Image (cartoon, rainbow, N blue to C red; front, side, top):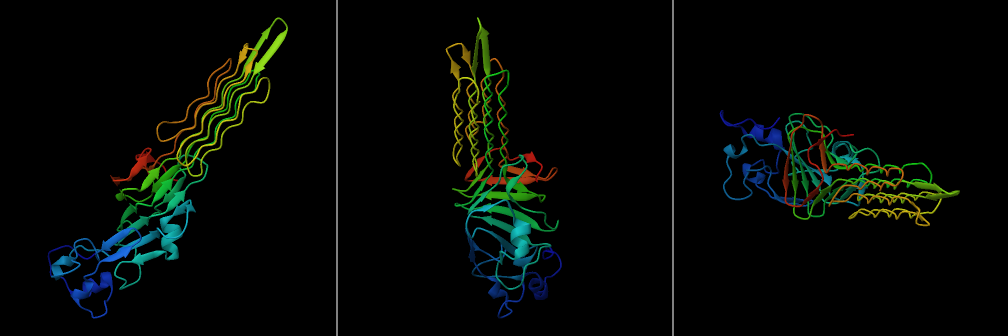
Length: 328
């Protein structure tokens, strides 16, 4: 547990039990500032002096600080800060005077690189906090190079030039999944937490029968949604006069919907819907004689376990909902 609050006198033994023994076993050697990942000048804990006078009362209610390493190395896909990082000792104990402990500690998940999701349901996340001891205080600090990005949904298939409708676009997935109550998320300038956006719907098909002529026009494919990885453009319909495939999305934009098929200015398929992006959700495919497919739903920037509280301090960029519930 953290050191007790103010009231009864505090012993040096209690301080050592929380933070470990420093080299000279002196109060003064607990004055430090440390750089870890994107975090600079960390004290032993907030409120403990880094220079000048230090006294026993400075240690009331203080906690061991442990920084979980989500900042070093290259891009990663679908990770848990608890399961993949903490459990494998990818971390730094501030001060370095003892080994890690979970109960009662302040856990700082420092993100300063890219985490991507994969294509699935909206509640699948690029990075999850994992579940922690209820006595721990957990925060997520996203540095200026941190990127937590949901995946884009694929565009829907355009309808064939017969009596058929366009296919719906696939859903995007989510960025950060919070699985601990009373978590604080801090996003520094330049840091990004972003939903994955859905794929556009495929365009509807058309068929016109007149005076012995049977004219058919297919729908265009839906555009892929913005995300990491981005959604693929949907294929066009394959019978009658053909439109075009939807365009692939990218990490920064949704793909355009494919053009409609037109048969002798009599049968007109529907164009595919645009893939979703930060400026707006995925578009539905255009209707023809038959309906276009719906645009895929967007994921969330931040999801949380139902009933849990999350505080967000944003000096960077957050695209998407921060209040969605359910984390897979």
